[in-house]
Image (tube, rainbow, N blue to C red):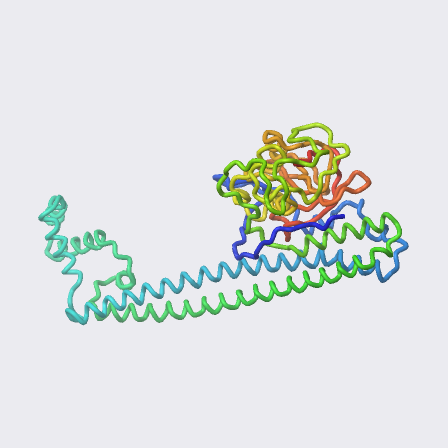
Length: 463
């Protein structure tokens, strides 16, 4: 079987909290209904009994069986748990950094206010009455502008000179709308302080803000270090998985029964996917121009338009019995035209929300050099969108095909969201009417989680 190919992606700090298992194409206005999907750990606990590793490894030497089971545990439990821990740590690190940046900005603003006030004191003295200057300025402006009527209203409704000055000061404060540290300190003390008093208040505020900024910075550094540690733990587990997988591949000749070979192959696929555990923040195969890409050859990918001789050219329905198109395919990532039809790939995967099933399906198909569009819709829309673009869509599974779950359709022990549906990618067709799929979604610790599901009554998007 050909080795699976993957798109290179990078880890990112941006993790979308509170996203549902929506598999949508855009963030809808207003509240998004909470999906019914279980968490990844719950999915694993409830997984179908059709895949019983112990039964399939019956008769296999204990050392090899233990090796397979250890790799399966790494791929489906320990690595996803480490990825989830990393996701949580990265989210906390991003929040702590935002808080530290905000504290630093507040401190800088207060220091600027202090510098400005110190400069004024140096120019005109500590006892200069800024409030009276503001009143005088407003009065001058009022007599020369349309504010005259406002000024006269203040004068005629004032009972005393004190009342007049007070009202003018209030209007001046509103007109100026200066929300700086000096004014804040004055409001807190409920007095029109002189400059010396305000400077003391600002200095006190600067000291408090510096203490807060230092604490926020310390916390940000601590959670960032924790996120880095979680990153190293994940990478160590992935390296361990790669080593165990290589060891298993070297011993596959010891597996005599078809059931044992199938079990080992499933575990190998799970391990390869887990080794690519990622935050879905980088989009593979971006075609930013949206230009038509006709049947011209491209390096490393063969002809982008011409399918293998045995494959119909861009059919939208019908049987696929005897299909033998290759996986990986021959459609370069980001292609706008492939296998005789438009792919719908205009902006790469950027239209799909992070950590959703739609983005995983886009990235996985791109990694396998199979065509995929940028605006296929919510999960349950993909089959109809694909037909409209000329893809072959039918009920026959094949490795690399997109498996579409309609809205409310059962996946395995859980049900696709009633509003959005779900999509996954077929990784292996099994001999009992089931398929091994890889899938993404907010409820799963990793993009590319796997499970075995029935192929009956599903739609499959091929090429």
